[in-house]
Length: 587
Image (cartoon, rainbow, N blue to C red; front, side, top):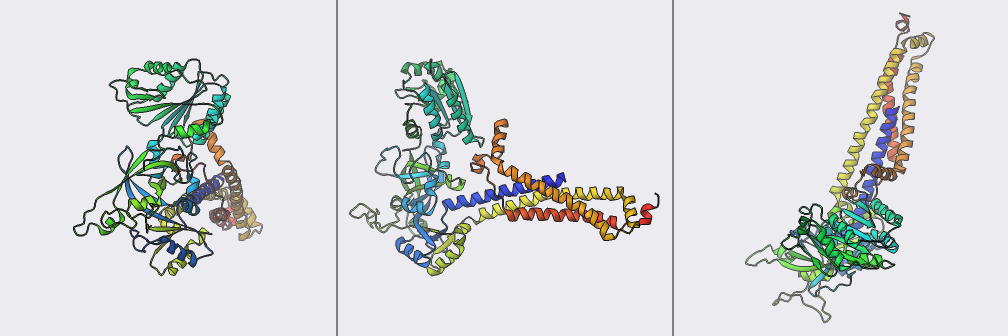
């Protein structure tokens, strides 16, 4: 019975978690992918659509009751460089007001930035730059790896606790209050718990005054100078306090560091730069001060996040026209270059998007890729009286419908309504390989876990076989007194079914309890061992998902009872076939 119990419980938990993962994955795909995408041609995505407004009207006319919103996009592969080696990415020109109606673009913005191309920190981009919003994976090299809070005063502690959730360090943060210190590790999947624990620790500190600024800053600098040769990503020290540390304290703390740490770490205060002469200075540490109060959080966002706000990205590509011509004849293909300024970032939870997507205004992308009217002599875009391009082209329309499950039928109607001249693809077809892989993985996992139930069934077979051998005399007496073959079989079949029913009942109850408390159990395990069974940095989900699907659970229970019945069938048949004379011969 214990084998059936644990087999059913394990199978139900695993299938429920895999079902929840598949459900959340599909939701994330729908959040960044339109329900239906219309391209210029069924055979190629290199083509462009010159009058997308008219095409959008035709799409709406084909399915007026189903289509909710339509957004144009100009998507093109690029190579980007931002102080690191060039990497491939995808430039996507959008109209934010339309895009947010089609996808979950606005819901995935980080750090409180608005879902458009306005600059949060009010920096002014150079006139030839275009604003862009990049994925958190592209953004990783601009994030502070480590952040240290130094608090002076009770108000500073409260402000630091409330502002802790606005920063986004990549791996670690340190909290220094008086002589006390607290470390939070963010690379094990427990980011939210670590931040909450850090905030609670800050609120519990009573003596928050800094008596020795040089000593406090020295501790902060030493924490940032670990493994200096192997760590080059930027870091920051945030000082919360009404009274600023004296300038001499920075220099004294700096000179207290060992010479090898000063060689590899350069410190940027608000008044000077502390650099060791002749050093390699591969890691930059910024020091900023935040005054406690209601505005501390906003000040922290606008200042700590500056490592990427306003930074430039160099874009290199070839235009769609050159890609279509492919250098035919004597035409020379020259690369097209553009400069983008980062004004925000997003995290969709899908690595494919977060590491490659760069959003920019549609008109800027059209101008950069020459997807508009071009002057034959100057080869520059022709502008109207308001300085806007003319006849801008896109290469796809993203369509949102009322019910995403009807995407296939609506797509067929749109395909027929457009006369087959345009490509029409649904979100399931666009991510078919990924969705099929998850479905196959879920099925295989269920099959593998079911072998636990089969092993439990073999235990039932062995136990009942031994019981038949042990009770041969009793079976013989029953048969001699007139018990029928069916009656004897019913006894042992019933025993096998009782084991199966009790095991399934306990398994159902245990699985329901574990799933209801799955995340608290994972949190408890993390607090005790430091290991989280569902790391966020791998699965890109904040919590362990699960979906208790009644049909699946009924199938598991039914299959388990059937296997238990089969396991009891042979011993019961063996018992029923015993000859009473042979069974009682030696009694």
